[in-house]
Image (cartoon, rainbow, N blue to C red):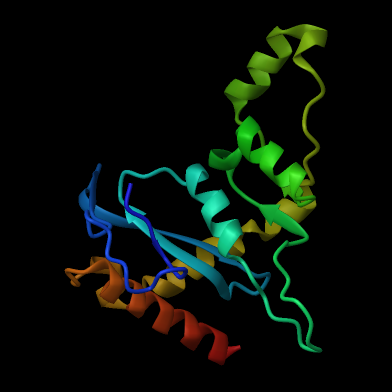
Length: 176
């Protein structure tokens, strides 16, 4: 899987971050955003790549500078994610990093836990009020898609396409 992210900006993945998904050739944009929808970390993969395997890559690249100086912040207070991130591995990773997890459980995981009875364990905590703020990430993706070149991926190289995404992210930061 070719991943293009900020750590090595000059490296072009062999697949150019293009892959087959249901709609044909596509590129998937993965990002972490703050509470106002401003992108903090951006990565690209081929269209068929999953979201959950990219979470450790995104968290590894996270570094938010502090206003008063000092080491940059590398750990968010909480991570709001959809049901695609509700795996045991993801929850374990976030627990190890001491990040509050606000991810709902899919119905099949709930049913499996309940079938096991008392051996199924306790359900993970879930704050429904806090989860209402998850629409911020969806709105951030919609901001990116307002640019025709980003919505349709006219660029051949993934590095050029990522440059357009980063430019859009800078404009989002300047707007607020």
